[in-house]
Length: 174
Image (cartoon, rainbow, N blue to C red):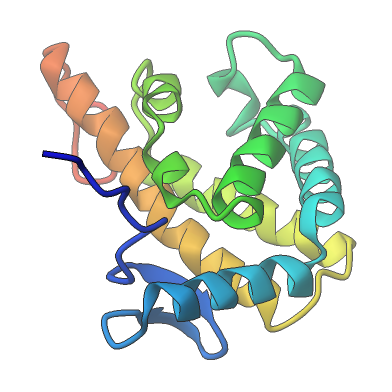
């Protein structure tokens, strides 16, 4: 039986849209694709994400809370990888990149605390503000980053539990 290729996504995702995150259940895959393409163009595409991630990792490199999480402080490499990740998700409209196992593995080697997650979001906002990031696209992006950072926190905590680590609700050692 020949299989038909799946659409680029099924339209049942949270996506960047004109008023922030919205369910796309009522939209066709073509409409969802258009919204993602509009976001990519509106925020400035690859050039914006390259600049954003470079500025973000400049801030991280000097940050007492986040810098220690990186065993190899190759900030240019980290910036390039994160920019490429955003490029796959938004530029190539590959929403499966959000669940890339390498992204999860990178966050499974340590326990992400509430303080670290909030600091990550704060520095991402600061990096975008320094670049005069276009609105409303940047606010929409930060909303997605709140969700994504929560997922990475969950990945790190699940891995910590599997290693036998115990911790409080905020990720601090028990």
